[in-house]
Length: 207
Image (cartoon, one colour):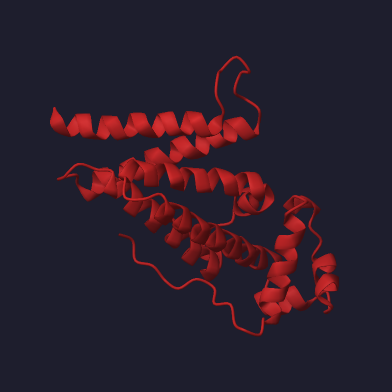
C-alpha cells in the first residue's frame, strides 16, 4: 500500500483559502476551466483579485489546490460506495468504478481540471494527498479481488489495467464515441470488463 498523507483539513471557521477554492469549485460545476476568471472568483468571495496569487503563489498552484479538494471529496464518496457494497470483492470493485463514473458525470469540469492543465500531482500537497488517497482505495479494492500469492508488482499492474478500463470506457462514452449499435451503457460495459478481468486473474492463478 502506498504511504498516504493527510488531505486538506477543513476548519470549523472556513479559511480564505478554502473560500476561494469553494467558489472556484462552484463555478466549475457549470463552466470549464478555460472560462474560469480569477477576478470573478475573487469578486465572488469579496476579496482583492490578487488574493488567490497572494495565498497560493500562482494561478496554476491555486488550481492544483482546487483539483486536490475536488479529488479528495470524490475519494471520500468512493470510499463510502465501496463500504456500502458489502463483502464481495468484485461488488466492491464495481462500486468503486460506479462512484468514479458518477463523479465524472456530476462534475466533469472538476474531474478534468488537472488533466486539462497538465498539472502534476506534486504541484500542491492537497492534490498529491488526494491522489494517494484514491490510489490506495484502488490498490486495496483490486488487491481484495486477487487470488493468494499475487506479487505486489503484478497487483500494481492490475490496478493500472483495471483503472485504464474504467477511465477509457468512461471517456469513450462521454465523447459519444461508442457506436449506437452497441447494446448497453458505459456502466454495463465497465461491469462486464471488470467481471472479465476478475475471472482472468483467478484463471491465471489456477493454470
